[in-house]
Amino acid sequence: MRTGLHALPLAVCIAAVSGSAFAENWPQWRGPLFNGSTTETGLPTAWNVETKQNVAWVAPMPGPAAATPAIWGDRVFISSVDKDTKDLVALCLDAKTGKELWRKAVGKDRKAPVGSNNMACPSPVTDGKTVWFYYGTGQLVAFDFDGKQLWARELEKDYGEFVVKYGYSSSPLLYKGRLYVLVMQNASAQKYGRTHDRRTEPLESFLLALDPASGKTLWKHVRETTATDESVETYLSPIPYESSGRAEIIIPGGECVTGHDAETGAELWRWWYQPADRQTWQRTVNSATPGDGLVYAVRPKHRSLYAIKGGGKGELGADGLAWRLDQNVPDVITPLLYQGRLYVANDGSRVFVCLDAKTGKKLWEANLASLPNLEMKGVLRASPTAADGKVYVISQNGEVAVLAAGDEFKVLSRTEMGEGPCTASIAIAGGKLFIRTAKSLYCISGAGKGRE
Image (cartoon, rainbow, N blue to C red; front, top):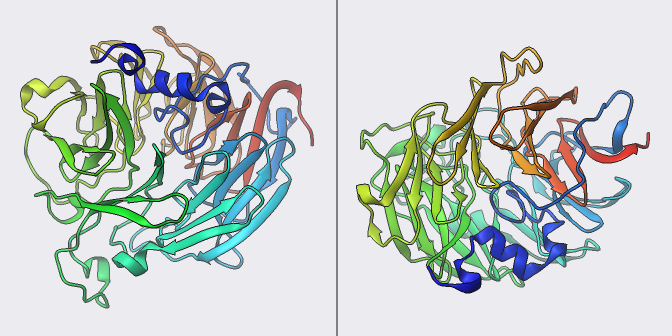
């Protein structure tokens, strides 16, 4: 690994180069450091939605959605469905008051082939001047901060309707002057009763790099795999990783993890999931988590978590793996990396584990479902986030657990939001928490009594 700035982990590099303004924002799904954490301080430990204690404001949402808000300065951006009109909408709120500044209808919602997901699952992304909204229909729209549309694309018109069982949900990634969009889909165009689709098979899965200023496609890299049927499909978002002077885009899914050159999309390395037993239903939901010298990736269906050594080339063997975890592994949520510790949870059983990120050594384990002071009844569908020495966990039922970050397990508070289902991650910016429920967006502040 090179010396100087390039020897630092990606998170430290970003904070050092971009300054405090970047660290105080939450520009995309996994935050400013791409690992679920931020350097924010002064965050609330506890609040009460009934008495409004530490609740700065509550903004009604036009409908339910899984999109996590993006926050920059005095703007909050969030994707949603309008339950009355069935429009896919892009929303901008005032971060100080929750007042709606503008709302744009950009397309129509549609049902997922299977299940109840809507098309407002992908999260928006911003760079402080432009905000990009993306939806499960392939609709991608860029706005300035005043709500003026800069450009729009319908990616499904160019590449065909995405064939993903529970609805396409990948969020875009903004990184090094490019906008990355991942499509990992079933190879059969007529899967899930889609008999109308007569495209030539097998359908391609691919990574796109777009020009953020114009939406123009810069390149398309076909992401190949020998996996079959639903095991090719993913719901995850591409994540960047820097190691040994290389900038990579990490893509789990299709029974393997791959690292791609951020400039060209070319595959640099590949790790096949082990053991190599195959099933047709092993779709991947979790995104990768970038570390300092390691990439953390999860095999579907609670099977294993792999800590893969960074900087590899070609097809990696056994020596490409630093360590693995085979118990209490998530199926849906993405692991959190914070202050040298990796936080992992079985989203079904709610068993939460804290590991030493370098070695995989278990530091503590706790069942959030059975602890007397927690009794978290809802499963976990939103990935945990962290800052200010705190880890924030929200269940699908809207139960929020605030845990102390560190080598010892400690519950700091438990709060009922009272509005489920909750599937968006808790965003952190400007000393506040932004929590999306089925009906509202809450702004939680540690600065005392909030406003009605």
